[in-house]
Length: 73
Image (cartoon, rainbow, N blue to C red; front, top):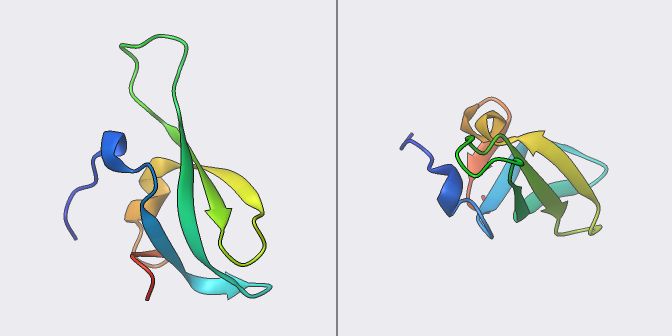
């Protein structure tokens, strides 16, 4: 897998390997920045395409191939 750049995550598409309640496809709807502009980005908000429900996760979780696949698979 290519290394992810947290600055390019906004509006990227992801597929959950194990869908929960028909929620399989997600879109990164917001990159959550820290108070200090020099601190690295740690969290992103993902939105389910099916239900529009959102959740906040560490962006590095998206690199775990056992949980997420990049794109809508």
